[in-house]
Length: 311
Image 1 (cartoon, rainbow, N blue to C red):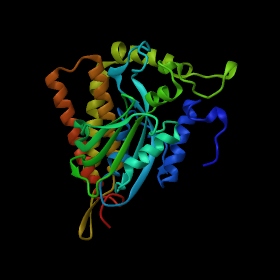
Image 2: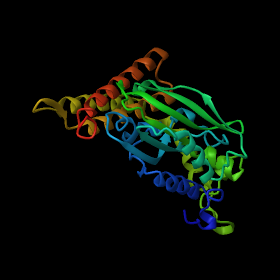
Image 3: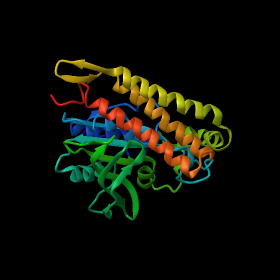
């Protein structure tokens, strides 16, 4: 790879850190996608992972995804815990046999040399109840701190994964803090400049973190949110029902993606309701099951689409 300008090097800037990962995975044949334009709790919810992990067709992609977890907000007072943060997601289907080695090389590309640092893979199988998904996995630790998750998908949206996809999830802020040597996320150098030109992570996001914490915990309109959940759930079911088409010797679905968008909406609205503390323990499980049923129905629809079915 060509050398980056100093201000864009991964150890100097958050944006250069992201660019280095994008360049590395592009070199491995991944499609470099843009973030999905919806609120979601994790990069795994992006249809490029959840839906594309299903079916037999080859798929290699990498992307940054803003992730929102309303309950994790701390009004900007916690050094590394936020209600909005970034994940870098890689999915490779079928999973290459050298995926772990590629991961270690990606760490080197962002300034973490595995021959110098203590890199460990700690067994930690992954599960997402709302997505009806699970996989065999490992947490990736660097010098005693978790920095990534490494998963081989076995099932997504209630559908068995064949072939198995390999997924990597990088916690961008945590890794960048490690590389830049700062103890507070808001002190990260965002643009790699110094002096009057320097822009920090806090300059970009601290006010938003404070305001959305107030929104998520104190002011989000719960009556509206309950109605939004109902509307998203109904719309998802409506689009799923409307999308089926009988064609030749096989069923085909024509609206899996619009339906899945509504599933994503329902999941985020549930997370907001959970943050507001208006859902009991019993109700919480019920809501998780409702979102999971939507996800499973979307997965079933997807494997009957052009991109998701067998050739």
